[in-house]
Length: 251
Ligand code: FPP
Image: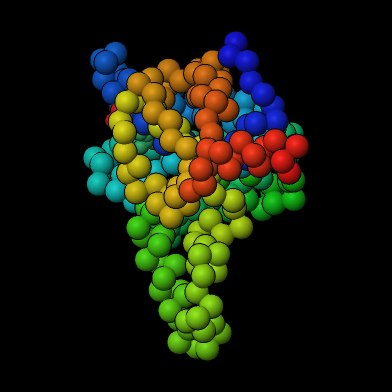
């Protein structure tokens, strides 16, 4: 097992779970079988993130662009999501995990929305990890919708244009209230952000692995986290400044 320093874990871990389709196709299986296996990996990652004490886990489960997939795959993914949410809520309660959703919920089928509403209400009082599912989510859509809401508030006098700071804008995003991700993992060898959390990833450490999502194991997760722990996060400062800040004699 990859050793980890519990004091240096990301507060917020975000994941682009890619490669379900290719995993299935390489095995002459239907793509949905890859998604089903991917849902098992989701269970493992949620469990591990909870055990490690990670406070926020955000998973890209369905993008705004995924609606253009064949209808049969979209339907199967929606059914899988509903089943996962219904089946896992009891476990979320035992582990004190709270569900959260970002994205355009209005696009989702009613039965999926009902399952989400039930899960969100049931887990609302949980104080452990926040598990955010990005569903029908697109970063550009989120930013433009936030800008439209903000413009309405300026027009109505609730806010003045001079009050529009980075922090103020952030509160209009779907992720208002969540810290920005510290670490992003993308599986399957693709090196893109694919319209995920465009605003929030400004200073996020990025990690890409060739492993397809259904093959992503506990040790692959620990390997990724160990890689994060070896990085120096400078946020625009110099390396010397960071070393001095971390040195108690210079504090
Ligand atoms: C990307 O793989 C994955 C998705 C579009 C869906 C992700 C869904 C799951 C992991 C399962 C259900 C989710 C939850 C939260 C229970 P892809 O199909 O784009 O793979 P490919 O690039 O190889 O075709």
